[in-house]
Length: 313
Ligand SMILES: NC(=O)c1ccc[n+]([C@@H]2O[C@H](COP(=O)([O-])OP(=O)(O)OC[C@H]3O[C@@H](n4cnc5c(N)ncnc54)[C@H](O)[C@@H]3O)[C@@H](O)[C@H]2O)c1
Ligand SMILES: O=C(O)[C@H](O)CO
Image (cartoon, rainbow, N blue to C red; front, side, top):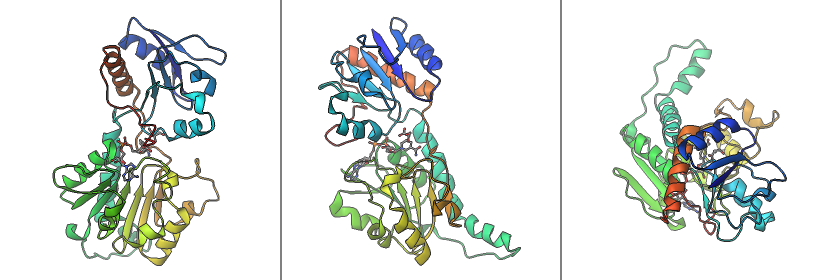
């Protein structure tokens, strides 16, 4: 079995050695421009078109992240990049859910305990106990209730917050109210105080967090974008912060990354920013998942994690 690997920034040797250890009888190599030799599996991030195009012998392509929007958008301009019938897989959790839970829970607790207000008071040397927020006024709504959103919702429910989620089809997570489809979006938003986004980037979800959505949230809402920058209309968020409809936002992802130095988001006192690291690929977990999936494909099984090109995620 031949496995080819391409990632613009990862430590290639670490991945080649790791995959070799997990599948000892495989020949694992770094793909380099001009390499047109056949392969059974490809592990990729931002793959050059010629790495995959024409390779209909591939039995699987593994994206080395959870979101496959960068690969699917390249397919728009280079439809032959993924040969017909070759399945595309993505990383399902592989250590990312725990990171998302840490990020979301810590920030929700930060807002709930009013640490942002106390930091502002501290800067004025003011000793002023504020009224507590109540859990019943702190309903958390998770947009996108898949592998990551579902786990984030569960971890917040464990802190006794009222939690709801929104997805394409109904979910059955204990203690979490599930809303599905565009028909139920308004009901989901109505009363949501903390909006956490974990949707995939698809034509249906681009720009979904806009004025119309923000205006339906509870007053003094909080917004956390952990999925993709294109989901959020940045100017609409700034307007909602200025009007007071939104009290604060925590953003990990941006329409343009790195976020340009002149972006007004940097200077806004009620926007917190992290540089797209809410959940990063954990190499060992990812390699174990890929090796397990390869074994399943080799046995003729249908492993989970296959991307639906039709749904776009
Ligand atoms: N910031 C980061 O560091 C980081 C890390 C990993 C993943 N992500 C992002 O998180 C996203 C989610 O990852 P995942 O593994 O949970 O994905 P997933 O495919 O398991 O879940 C997607 C969820 O979104 C819902 N959904 C999709 N389209 C919808 C629509 N039109 N209307 C309503 N619901 C819709 C699905 O029903 C599902 O519940 C990724 O696509 C990626 O963009 C970000
Ligand atoms: O989707 C992912 O895995 C991360 O956001 C990196 O792009």
